[in-house]
Length: 274
Image (tube, rainbow, N blue to C red):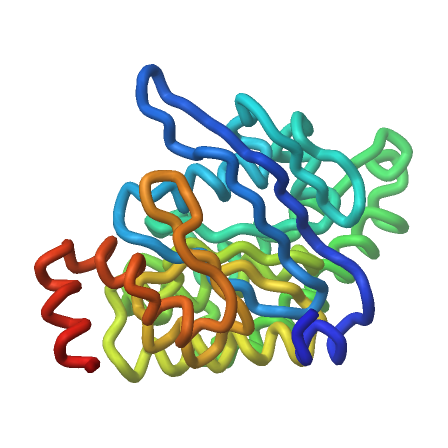
């Protein structure tokens, strides 16, 4: 267990995946993948395009049932549990492509992240002004707290589609955080960003782990980010794990260099390193 996982949230595993296999027609996208995420850590899932990263996350979150293997979340078997039930157990996710609601304000987009905590009932509707309004105010308080945490006060009322992509990514992260997750999955949260925007998001991810006690899995292509903020990584290639462990060592593994650069480039890289 990493130093961070021991310090932030105590003992235990957030996620354990054993022998995960998944095929699409004749294509075997995952081939017996084993991995785990410890409580309180930032875990990196990396690999070239088409390596199986997003498929693996879709299996973890219930979008795809595995053909074989088991997924445990917070110590419970969730191998064939539906996505909305997994979300209800404290898992939030952002997507590679922005999934914000155009034409709505930053505030309203973030407020939508509270939906997993909204449980309307006939009785609450009957006594709306007493109960339902009180519940809405409680949701608003959480949203306002996250808006401040993510430093979005100045654009809270702006239509989300007119703000820069770096801020849109920040809004999407805020929407995930207002669900108060125990486990947060980020699929390429820094895609399309400049260096300054990447540094901002990296800081917010670290703060979410440290200040909000959230364990995080991140899929990311920017290796400078992975080595800067992740405690451990697993590297996939063609659905198999080719390296894992401390980020700098795993990414420098010859099999990883070959997967990213090709065999000839990897040989040149090894010659330079020597």
